[in-house]
Image 1 (tube, rainbow, N blue to C red):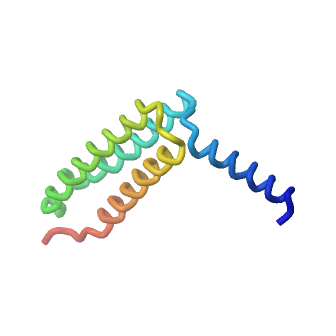
Image 2: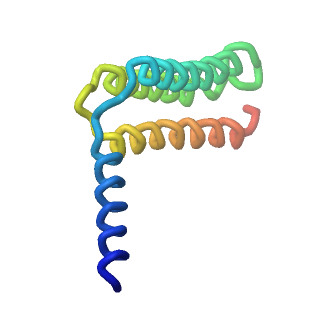
Length: 118
């Protein structure tokens, strides 16, 4: 490797490290991100609750709904932490957001896999 390519890689690594470990986040972006995540969580749990309460064939899913409700409360607490944390690095903020999105995806897939009560 030449000295120029090594210098370029070091500069690239320094920029990437500065971006990943940055704790600066725009208050507006932070608020919008948290509101969108919270609406996603609330909508997922609310739709499942509506399904359980309105369908006669879904009466046996009430236990699953209480677990989904508990999951929604826990996710809301994590979203509240994301909103109030000011010293959270960008990679951690992105990883927490990804975990929240994946947990909602798995909850939605679980809901679609349930069969009607007999």
